[in-house]
Length: 141
Image (cartoon, rainbow, N blue to C red; front, side, top):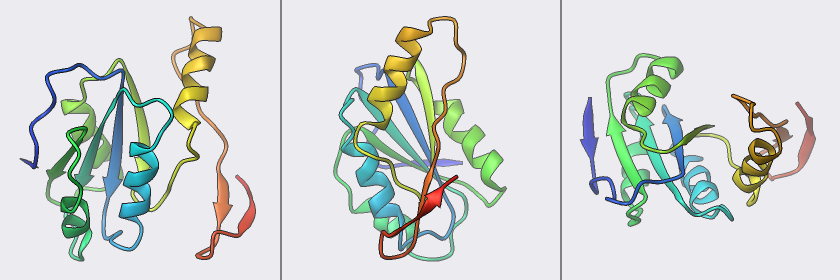
């Protein structure tokens, strides 16, 4: 496993966003931007490239944000990539995002409020809105 890019910020983030990526060059920019633009900005973003053979890594490397780190590893599957991200995560909370998905702007803020309302909860999740390549809704999952 190789960590590439900017070293982790000395400021401890509240949330670590682990983005798994495998051959998602056409989607990864939107995925990363949706994490960077969250209303809750105290976060780090760890993109774990799981051995992509397309332009995924090049697309990630175009970002210049101290909150973003790139980890490259041999292909081992989504669970392996998530585990690699968790190993280096420094946040109090961990949130997973797939490299071909994106979030609404206040997703993390709403999930944090849920944790505040339910302090004994260990896990929070949300439903997913499925969209086509034009952003048109295909329904909720």
